[in-house]
Image (cartoon, rainbow, N blue to C red; front, side, top):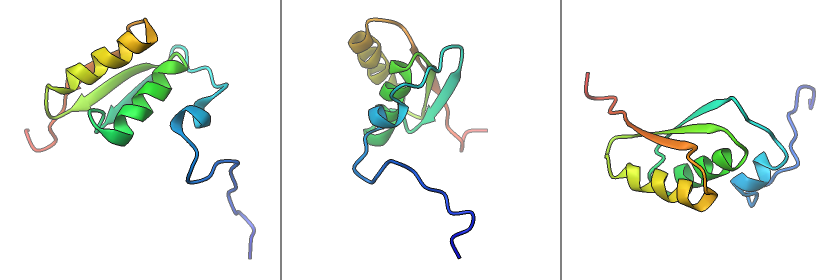
Length: 89
């Protein structure tokens, strides 16, 4: 039975930038966990490129470097970094 099947024009090879292309996220806030490595970095970069305000939630303050690099590449301050350690109550 295929009723309720969700389809998408994207594949496993689609990039984050392709997924958000043409979307305007102005006045929207995105919180990206794991934003200081691999998939998190590309997700944050793609969201910031479509005008979202992005917060990188990181355990390690070294994530601030990633936020600065994304902002530098865009030429605008859209990415902030906040420490989030779910084990630390």
